[in-house]
Length: 233
Length: 314
Image (cartoon, rainbow over all chains, first blue to last red; front, side, top):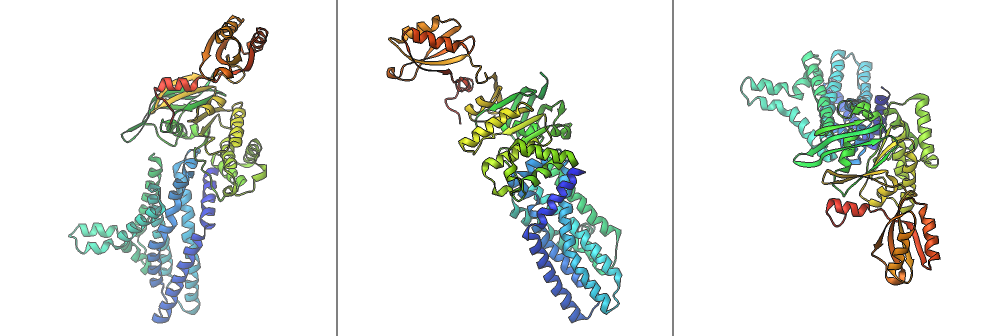
């Protein structure tokens, strides 16, 4: 446990001492703030549905930038050899990186809670979709982080890792549009792999275990692949 | 002597390429074994298998009795490893880095603090303990890398090309350090430089193309029984005979080298190193000018070339 906590502290410090995290958080909040204000003034709606969709699309672009360096940089600097020849399990190394990067996602989303507070102060919003929207963003963020982490674990180059992650995320986001062209049951199978199809219920206030299970499975799959990537040597 | 490292029929393939081919050796307690070979001979691959970084294709490797594949964590607890490129976290300060490495090696509390202080003291890092690693010279970075390897007081210390990229003064420091570390640890050190291995190792394993060609015991400095004598006299033959007549002299071989004005050179095999003093007196009394007497360079390079059948080292 001491080893894991040391790894977690090192990863958190590395992420939050780098200007990349702050730049990403700032850009995210700027766009989200604009989106919230525009939606509020133009539609006079007391929901955050548009904001949640905006955030999910931004995740597709931002998460590859967070995950690209996690393993690729360690591999390039040779420090991965230092870690993996120490008496720690590969899973501990992977989990430390995953949890620290999840902290960046939480740090991105936490300030946006002020939007919910503003809505609550000046109106009576339906809190159900607010809760589910944030749960959905955290679940989707977790799944994307794990996949991005796995891509980074397989790659020695940060740019390659970011590009592949972005490609995988965009493909998973848009894959449901392919479903319209496919016959039954393939359309259903393709839709089941779609990020958009699983995120939409969260954003609109419907919380299904199947959607939560999808993102949880994606997270576990990404973590499993990351561990396998480290063990494959 | 208890074996700290036991390697049996170790083989490692990278796809079709055979990097290590059925290598077997062992290393005893407080012994320094040098792995010697040209670049690409499999030295680093063997070390990486021993440290658990690479999985062997076949064969076994054990550290203090723990199989590196089946009981990897236990084996790694007993190893301190300094990789060739000295990978460190440049943004960390020295003490912070050692604290981090100590924690991932399972140390905590007072034991961790004590281990960090021990490592800092052992490698004379007091002056740089609060400096960021990025600001350190190559020599200090090497010391920090060795310091982290010492934290958990491992039974086995593995140093991959520890003098690479260092200036002559730093090379001497690291060499002295390895000698002193051998009093407390078993040391496995690699180099492609013959003289480096000769100066620190008790035994040398000669590798070529992934195969172990020979395991040779080296005479430590001060105990060598091969002397190099350079002398000037009436004739080379007379000097040769004079040396050969002395008690304790087993064999005299003329050495090709300097011209006649620089004297005649002989490699003299003696029963014990102290014979040198009597030999000098005898030569002087015999009217021979003694220009130089010292330990003969070990013939490791010759042996290496004989074994490998190559003319030069890569």
